[in-house]
Length: 337
Image (cartoon, one colour):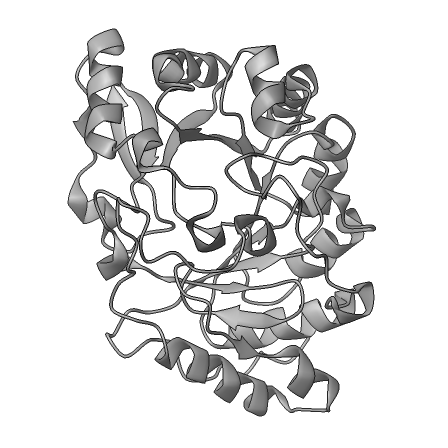
């Protein structure tokens, strides 16, 4: 029997918010070019040598687990384009202390990868699908294939994974499809979720005129499907993520309302970029580097201290504003949301 893994002090920020959830970007590369995520001219990609190796990711996950992190979500870029992603998932799924391993993906490669990823230990996928119109889908993603994504969703469900569907709600684009996206998810046993657009990329991709807030999202769903009922707030006392959930006749949907109905007071997350920078908040650019001390031979205790310093820098709340102010310079594609 392996010896028990010695824990470290519980990771928490200055406001006594316990950090139990880590989002890990596996790559800044993506096979789509979504209009709300990446500037049309693209982004400067980091050198591959700067990206954390499998061994480095596994080591860091072990330290985070010893600090009390229990839930890990793999993001990108697009995580499935990382070479050897199935092997990596298997490694991370075996890290002692990690109880939930999930992934956010555009779904394009899921038709082939869903079953191997599930077998490797991935329990959940969130698949981005902003519209059910193939032409509109291709316009939003600049190169996406709706049919492949739907096939990927079905493959993930068939493999036994929990599936959630992520749609960025944008006025003038998909506000008329919210009910249809709910039906699409419910028919398959997937949970639809609607995300308010956020002013990343120094506000370059954000337009206040396109903002569709949580209250209007709920109203549009109510008009088409019936009044949604909020889940008991007590169930969200220890949130697993940023979404707040509602139900219509027992069928569930979520809203991630960063702009209009803040959830900072219950935030339990930090983010690790593909190059090992620890971001305490999506809305700010400051970060604590973990790759350099890791490669310089830092001990687990040294890495834990660096991680805690990152958590200590977590603000009480973000500065996103509906006018687009408070935007960080970093791109959504590079941090994985």
